[in-house]
Image (tube, rainbow, N blue to C red; front, side, top):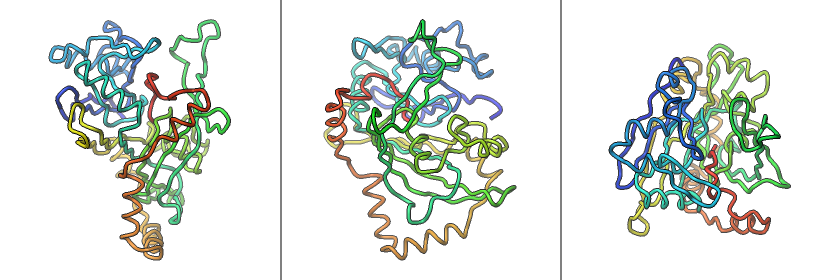
Length: 340
């Protein structure tokens, strides 16, 4: 993209707000922002572009809590009301608490996996019609690369997170997915793509990116996990990870039992342009999918399955049990992990 977009508030609610986080903005949940260092000039240069800075400068007068530190446990504190994280190059909905009580309730909901979060991603290759919707269950472990052994807790330039599918030491992770559209590259018609809607049941670091890779379909613009030949074409069409947090449904903080709020964010304009300028619908692939749906119970059966995968409540007790048996407790609690 040519310039970093400004964040914007999608919805103001009692005690919290939903923010549109553009790609390029960092969610720093574990450290206070240096307001002398994080300036809009730096943001435009794609340096020190921090959501906390924006929240405090743009909304801090209206919501003084955004200036405060909120300690979540003995080892973790959060700043700026940021209730969860999105990776730097992921755009979409970000939930912000604007007072201590609601912030802690949002954090509790997130820790206990009570949020129904949907993402849109574009992957290399075309998912087969008989695999057009389903569930990916594969544990994920993460490690920090480039850490100074003499100062292992310091983070800075050259230090980044790397996730791996790890059936020995990884944390349980589940992603549900459904194909939305099939595309072809306009310039290279032999290259196909699939637009996928993902619902994450857990929230591990780089979860969607690793789970789709585990299926054999890396995300467009994911220069950390893509294959070398994929990167060559990606650099022509997309210079960020094609991943957008498009919808979240959550219990209304302080609301009546069963009361929910749904927040939607349309696909980032830059990603819409990636599709418009570089891709075209693959009508043959869509015909093959329609034929498969018709042969396996029709649209009614497909919609019933969609309801089960993408909207229905989930019994997540087995995640807590498995983590407890591994001696890890809640693998997400208080760590402010990225969701994707």
